[in-house]
Length: 240
Length: 222
Image (cartoon, rainbow over all chains, first blue to last red; front, top):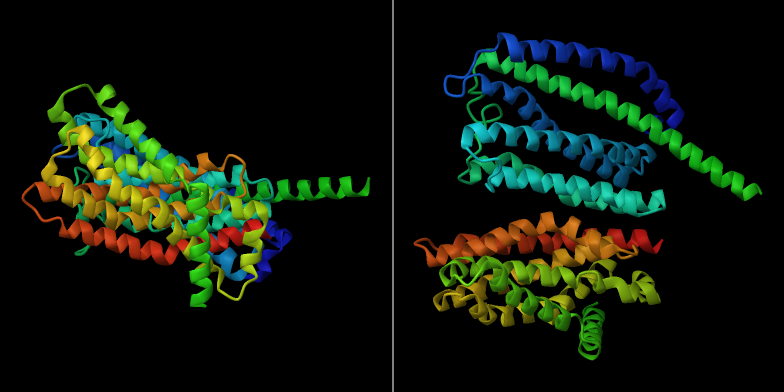
């Protein structure tokens, strides 16, 4: 793993990978959206409005996964002192935050016709809102501390402490009486969702995942460039 | 090691006693909130009674959060925190003693004083004992998590604002189970599950908060 610690080597790998990531993202979105809007059946209760599920559910799942990834990168940074791990965590956060916001917003749009309310304070929605706050807090740490090395140390702590929320979000619909739909895919007894709805859903999840990968690699590239710039500037100042 | 822990605890208790540790500010905050709540919510006493446990818990939470950033501020600024990292006692234990002293001087007194003040919100007298028990049970968790927030933002100028953003997500479970202990007791169910979960949260924070705070403080002291 230390081989990839050298930013130049990371860039050598990331640069050719990026166009492929974008290509796969585009293909997966094409298939996923086609499946979501054309081939998948309308719900017996909800009718056509069920199709918002294909936007809402992948965004929510991915935002949880990205937070776990952020905490994992922070742990790697702490344990192995891998210099790019902090960069990976820092750049993953905004994407995860946008996914989380997308989940909350589309969920709200879905909830109004289904439940009659834009927002309810049940366990799942509250814990997802808490996830949003955790993302914002993490990003605020990077913003408020000037020295990037110190900011990295503090941000690791924040990311790792916050990961406790992720299992709470996942199991909130099982542990509490929630208005939100209980788990349909990752549960005991396997997925209970119809196959014709499952494959577009999984395709959309993969699409969101590859979108994250593409954006993340791009973001890491620009963060590495920004750090190089910062180093050059401070070295230049030192000379004069 | 126990001697140094006791010494640290006594030092912080004495400092709090001489300087006024934050209890005054926190109490003033609670009183302000309790006075303004009925004014903003209207005089409907039945409504206030229903809301009283939640509002009491909310004001306790915010009051403790208010005093969070002063936990490490002074020692960080005058350099004593730096010395404490070099002591033989593990730094995590030092931080834990700071959390304890905050609990003893701010959270616990507030948890003891606040429930009777709930009568200003027409709190049901029958719910006073369970409110006391739930607040005392949750007070240590509040101190531990507030201390974590204080440690993570100790070197920042406007740290107090960030503390709220960081610690609010961690306070949400404490608030939920603290209030549900009271409402369960007044209803047909038992308050025991909620109180047990409050204890569980306290135990987890007892482990996580000193470790995370020590790591964050070390980052600032480098």
